[in-house]
Amino acid sequence: MLLGRIVAILLGSLVALLLPPIDAGRAAPAPKVAKARPKPSPPPAKCEAPRFRIVVDVGHTPDSYGALSARNDPEFGFNFVLAKLITAKLKSEGFAATRLLVTDGKARPSLFKRVSAANDGRADLFLSIHHDSVPDKLLETWEFDGAKSYFSDRFSGHSLFVSQQNPHFAASLMLARMIGRQLKEQGLHYASQYTLPLMGRYRRQLLDKDVGVYRYDGLVVLSRTSSAAVLLEAGSIINRDEEMTMNSPERQETVAGAVAAAIGEFCARR
Ligand SMILES: [Zn+2]
Image 1 (spheres, rainbow, N blue to C red):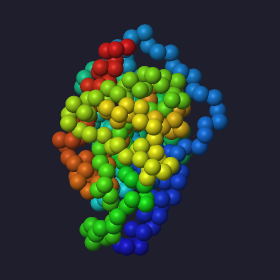
Image 2: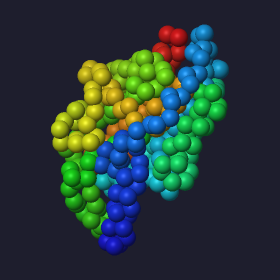
Image 3: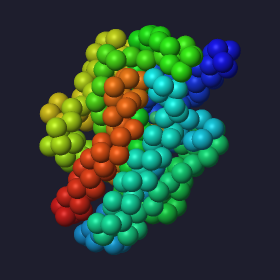
C-alpha cells in the first residue's frame, strides 16, 4: 500500500537520524563521546581458538531494522542470516566461544546494549555485521511488487570500518585488513564511494585503499568496545543486482568463509 510504504520510508528516515551505523542514507554519525575511552581488555598472551571470545553482532534490531533494500526487505534480516552463518563457520573452525549477538529495542539504546554485552562478557573481538545503502539524495524510484520502491544501482561492494578511538585500534585495523584481503582474494570489490564529496557527512577517510578499510571514529560499537572491533558492510542491498547476490547462499558462504579465514589468521598472529 502506497501510504504504508510512505510511512515506512518516513519511519526509516527517522530511524536514520538516531542511528550511528553506516548504512549511508539511513544513518547519522554518533554524537561526540563525552566519557573517557573504554578500558582496554588486556590482550591475551596468545590466541587459543576455543577460548577466544568472539562476538558476532547482528546490526540493528527487529524494531529498528536499518536500511530498506531495493525490494523493501529490512536490513536486519540480511544481517541476521549472514551473522548466523559466520558464527556457525567460526565454531566449526574451532572458535567454540563465538557468540551471536542479537539485540532488541530502539536504535540508539541498542548500541549501548551491544557494547555492554561485549564488554561484560569480556569479548576478545567484536565484529558487527551490516548491509549498505546510499544517502537519501541518491535514491531513485521504481516499482516493485506493485509498490513504489527506492533503489540506487550506482554503487556496490563491501566496506570495512574501524575507529581510532578503540583501545585496540591497531589490532582492529589489522583484522579489518585481513578480512578485506580475504574478500579481495574471492574476487569481490570494495565500495569506494565513501571518499567522494557526494557522500557528505558520510564521507570517510580511507585507511587501506587496497582492500577498502575506512576510519569511522564516532561509531558507538567501535569506539566504546573494550576489545578490538570491526564493522563489515557486506554489500549494498539498495543496489538491485547486489541485493539479489547478497540473498544468495553462495555469496553468503563466500563472505562467511572469508571472515572466518581472516579471524583464523588474526588469531594465529597473536
Ligand atoms: Zn546497518
